[in-house]
Amino acid sequence: MKNTALTEIHIKEGAKMVPFAGYNMPVQYAGINAEHETVRNGVGVFDVSHMGEFIIKGDHALALIQQVTSNDASKLYDGKVQYSCLPNMDGGIVDDLLVYRIDEKTYMLVVNASNIDKDWDWISKFNTMGADMKNISDRTSLLAIQGPKASAALQSLTDIDLASMEYYTFKKGTFAGVPNVLISATGYTGAGGFEIYFENANAEQIWNAIFEAGKPFGIKPIGLGARDTLRLEMGFCLYGNDIDDTTSPLEAGLGWVTKFSKEFNNSAALQQQKQDGIKRRLVGFEMIDRGIPRHDYEIVDADGNNIGKVTSGTQSPSLQKAIGMGYVKNEFAKEGTEIFISIRDNKIKAKIVKPPFTK
Image (cartoon, rainbow, N blue to C red; front, top):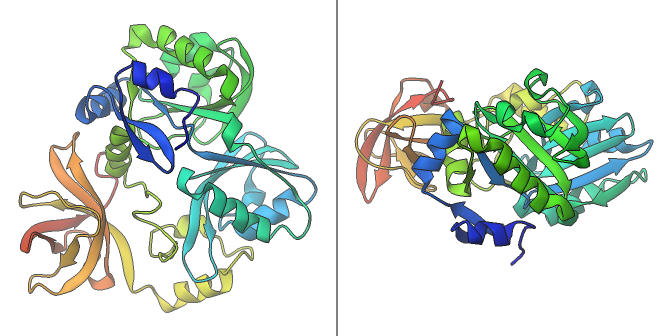
């Protein structure tokens, strides 16, 4: 099992550690609900150094990215980030990812931890034009500082004006005395904040500086448990749960990152699927009766007929009610439709709602 550059610190901080995507990761410190609350209302720090980073450079970098990703990367400018996905040839998704344009011929792709090798092999397979590819995952640390107080908590550590940074943009500069740190106004919580990329060698220095600067703002370390409840309240997909090699980006509600203004892997088949209409779609739902929906639970209609399955579910700390996402047949996808989750052979009532669950 791999460690991040900060594993020892998490253990000293009393984190409960679990194996996740081949890494030894902190799932919680003070408890998921308390950590969730910290991020929604204040500021918290996630170590997400398990994520993968690839640099793609050269004259053919953009052409390669355009072929393997569904979104239109030609629309990017220096300092802009784009959410996208890697379609496979069978109508599913290899992974979802972020594309960073560093300059006209240099891009960084940020991929899910569990898919680093798979994504690298997939992209390499299409690199027939000789773009320069580097996998910098093992030497790169990534912290997500999330919450409404994030920019105030971090501002003393950098000359970059954090509050003025637009969502899904990034800048490079000195941070906590370390040069060439990439600061990105992105995140996976819906609470605002930044993601910060730097060399492993600087991890401890940057971690300590963030917690010192953030002390007046009540900054706390946050585990992967709260990361999951926060992203689910926003209706953000988790690869391996809500999207995978068998789910189409159109079924998953990712039509907005599937741009048919260009050709990309399997684009003709996906365009045909769009024309023919999809038969199932990813929806959000909240429980009406008591019960917590879990991954792979059956979704049924009033007569008990299977109409789909749950992909993600939890008790929402912000809403104090159980929520979930899942795929259902198209005719059950309308907002307000009553559905039932099969929990231990009982039909537990729920209704379709449109994410985000927290406004």
